[in-house]
Image (cartoon, rainbow, N blue to C red; front, side, top):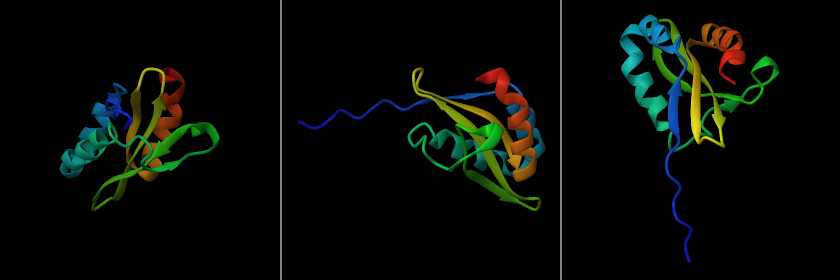
Length: 104
């Protein structure tokens, strides 16, 4: 008998991510769509190390400033994807590191 497909994960945004989207302006809609897709594929992006060990980071959009990334971790017990930050590489990683302790 085939295994039943699992329900998608719930995507949860850290409160500050709404401000991150404001900074993105023209690409925030594409970023939101990519983040939503994590509900079905929480393994997207590469695993991070150091203070962001346990988090992952996929590329989510591009604009004149360059590539934008999301930084998130997966809470398997709650079946949630918790997005800590979105933005350019440096910004997203720095903000995620600053926010991680509050949301883990």
